[in-house]
Length: 253
Image (tube, rainbow, N blue to C red; front, top):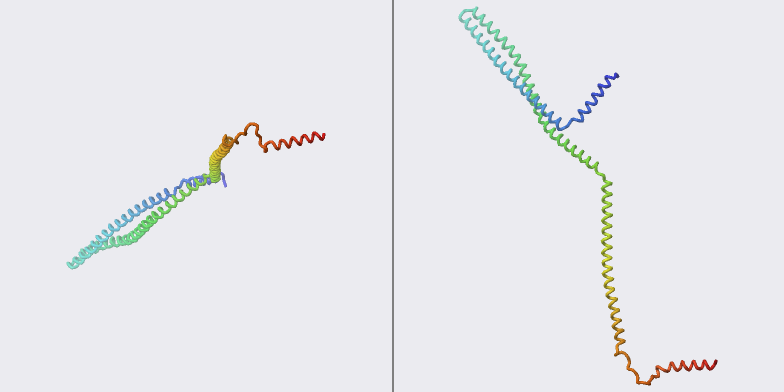
């Protein structure tokens, strides 16, 4: 393969790729419908022109056929009058109109086939356009759905699930820490509340004991003093016994 052929193929490949990428299904379908409608307009014009030609040829055929019949009647009239030469001339005129009418008849037969074919093509094209419009709407909806799905997939592709999951985990840990701090603060507040009551209860016990001690030391609770020079036996007896014991120990020495 020559260098020129390779360059040509490369250019064609690149152009085809650019065209393929530039093709928008919606725009292509719209343009295809427009092209078909233009073809329909041209086909309708062609059918109308063919029918008009057919009508004109039918008029010409009828005129020539009428002239041929008229000259035949004149030929009969000339023979009835005994003018054979005039009758022959009239028959020549009839022959000319008849030949023209026959030629037009052949054209009419051909035109009738063409008009019928054009009418069938017109009906088929109208049916195809109607079908194409329905299919265009369906394909357009599918193309729009495909574009939307492609955009959605692109958005989903840009989302980092691991990053979002990590963020949720961090926030969950942070909320748990906040809850723990709140619970600790509540416990500390409750302990302080209980400690204050315990202190109050302890102070109440001390106050009660102090009051009892004061009551025990009040003058009403002190026994009356003894008269001067009076001692009770219960108070001196142990001392005397102890003194006697010490004396005995000294005597032994």
